[in-house]
Each structure stands twice: as structure tokens, then as C-alpha cells.
Length: 196
Image (cartoon, rainbow, N blue to C red; front, side):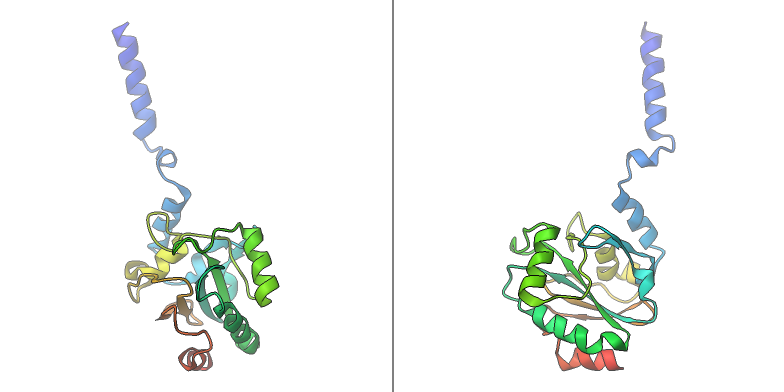
């Protein structure tokens, strides 16, 4: 009887640890391992606010601003400037990608549907909005791990300080600048970067 238990225990142990990495790797872990080989955003696919896949490879040749957003923040009126900037430069190979996040002060508690309705009704947002994610901490989304870690982006380490921090990505898909949350999207530094 003891030999049956021993054989069963060895079989279970072998199954759990012999190459069955899917049992211990989450999708985020797998994406993070792949991200280590990337130096551009073009290798990332995310889910948009409507549940569809958004492929960053479709943005090749465009300058991109990635910004984490929130609906109940003192900086929420920046949606208006973001939309204005987007409309002004959309035909000049520039795009804004918004990522709602509830990482700061519990200021984005809504569902994706509620966030989409809020952005449309209050600010007429037409630039692409993605599904709500984590932009810091243990559950950080792979795209934000890339943006904030030099070992992944090849440029610099940063930490998302608050809602509406802006990451500026060049036409080659590489990180170029990090702009703090309080700097308005229509700031001259950002406009000069878009036009350069």
C-alpha cells in the first residue's frame, strides 16, 4: 500500500514540475518574458475599452502619447486638452492612447462601459481608449512594465506618479519622453515634440 502512495506522489510531483510551466505561469508572466526581448511598443496587443484587440503594430510610423486616465481626479479635465491635441494633430501621424486606471486614490472605479460613456458624454473623447488596467504594483500591465522599466524599454526607468502621466513614443516605437501628470497635454514642450 505504501508503494502505491509513493508512486502516486511521484507521479503528481513529476506532472506538476516537469515542464508544465502553464500551470505556474499566468498570461501576464508570459507576456512579461516576451517583453524583455522588446524595445518598441509594436510587440504589444491590448484590449480596448469595447473588448476588442488593439495591436500597437498598427501604429508604426506614428508618434504616440500613452496616458493613464481617471474619471474622478482633479486632473480629469485634461481629457478636454487631450481631445483638442488629438484633433489638432491626428492627420499629422500622431495618436493618443488612453488607459483608464484605478491605481491612484480610487478615482476610476467604473466599468469599461461606464468609463466610455463618461468620456464621450463629458469630453467628447474620440481618441482610442483601452480597457482599465493596473499601471503600477504587482499586477502592472505588460505595456506599463515596458514603459516604466529601462531593462524593457532600453531608455529609462520611471514610475507613474499619478493619473494623466504621459509617455511619448517616437515613430520608431521607442520611448522618447516621460511627461508628468500636471503638465497639460497642450503644453508647448509636447507640441514641439509632435512637430519635430
